[in-house]
Image (cartoon, one colour):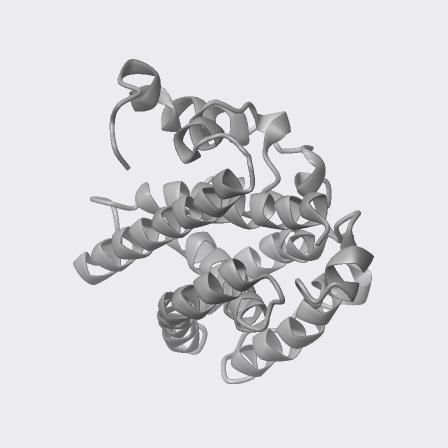
Length: 251
């Protein structure tokens, strides 16, 4: 098995979960409703926990321990897509990001539950249950607010238009794409995107929101190879604050 290809896949998945988990945690105490405050906090906890489990597999493959890889790298060493590192903005943007990302994640973990790499397949089977809940939560609110008032529809549409080029960056192909596919580790980003587009479109079709024309958009790529927005490093500095003070602190 091509370990370099496998590690690259694990790093980008773990980094996505870790960064969005911390972004979601920023809603704790600030949610628009108590229900949403709790929901985003719960999902944040799930995502940080999922990243730890992915880092643990990496550790078993010879990489540094989860704390070190999570808190001691700089922005250029992270492989997350740029979508997850963007600031939360208002609730409409966080909800749209949550919907676009977790729709992709549910499909990704469903695909990975059939991975030829057994530890990843087993973890994917476990994680997809949590991710299914996250995806369902996003769909409920998108359908409600995307068909509610003129203000809610307008704000969600603006956030959808803003987030979509970054969402397309989720599917930035790995340099090891052929190896991952041929070895049965992962069916590939193109296959994931082919399932994601109709999944997103079908939910939006039940609202007054309009799916952007993907052919006219320029995907925001680069995150998978260490090119990030100016927002990631300040987030990493904040995330690593406790670990740098007390390296023995648990997650």
